[in-house]
Each structure stands twice: as C-alpha cells, then as structure tokens.
Length: 110
Length: 115
Image (tube, rainbow over all chains, first blue to last red; front, side):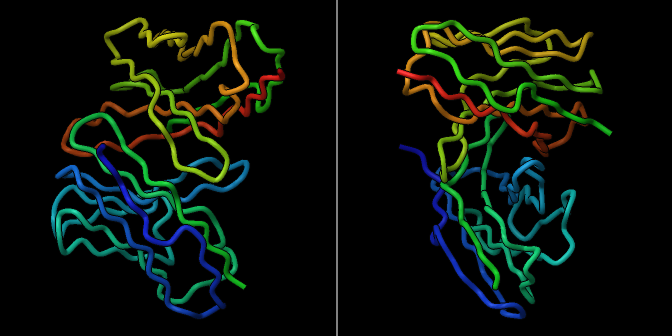
C-alpha cells in the first residue's frame, strides 16, 4: 500500500526552539508539499518541491524553511518556533494530479 | 485570487438519508477539482477527482458533479451511514500548467450521520 509517513504525530516544543518535521514517501513521487491546517482557515500551502534540491514558496512561507536532499524525503524546518506556529502540519506527495497525504503532525508551541 | 467556499460548515443527518455537500469557487479557470475526506486527527483521503472537461464522477455511493461556468461542485452521498461521519473538503487546482500541483482548499463541511 502506498504511503506518506510523517514520523512525529504529536510534538510539544518551546518558543525559540528549532523544530524539524520529517516526511517520507515510498511512491517515487516527484512532487511533495507541506500544508498547515487551522480551524476556520482550512489548509494553506507553506512550501512545495517538484524535484530533489528544488523548492518553491507557497502561500505562507514566513517562519519556515524546507529541505529536499533525497527524492523520498521532504523536511519542514521551523528555525525559531513561535506560538502562532501551533497547528496541524500535513505533508503530501504526488506524481501527477492525485495527492496522497500523510497522517499529520500536531505541533504545540508553548 | 481563487477562493473556495464550502457551505454549510457543519451538517447532521439521520442514517439512510441522501445528502449533498456544496463547494463553490471564484475563478473558473481550474484544471481539476478534488473531494477529500478527513477523519478527526488524521490526514486527507482522496475520494473523487473531476477534470475540468468532465461533468461528474462516481465512486460507489458517492457522486461528484462540476459546473465550471457557475463555479460550483457538489458531492452527493447516497444512503448515508454513521461511518460517513467526517470532514469533507474540496480543492481546486488552478490552470497554471507546468509540473506543480498546487491545490486551493475550502474549509470543509463537518458531517455527522446519526444512527
């Protein structure tokens, strides 16, 4: 069964900490995405990547960076976590039109 | 700028009822539209994808329609079951071309099917 795996389902961090959210897909997909989901705001695109070492800003990239050193892995980095980054983070991958999502990582920043 | 709206935000129906969920979008220049299901605390599962040239897609008890000119899509669920309880989201892909697959999501409709 094809899969997108987000290694951390629940994280609690303190303000100012550096946070890594990892996402791995086993489908040899070219495209990978990071979204955050907040009540009343829906899913908003943070960053996406269409190839190894390539990255593009989404709608809300401020405060985030990403890394795609290998095709199967796309990491989201919060350089200095803030309380307004408390959210559900969803990773997705696709080859063409269909997106496959991971289970999500719920991050709380205290 | 494309905006996707889903009304109502929440819906509660008795088991066995047929129901319709609505999705509207402001820019008709879309490449396709997808319906997703999200269970509490989980990721999204794709249900149906309609290309811009199509009018509808069916999968089991689900039927999705697309009217690009009016900027509307509906998801019809027949003979609803308690297991259908979830949040349903629609998302449109803009007709930008290229290799990217950027989707713009609605905020979802939370469906509760009462036994």
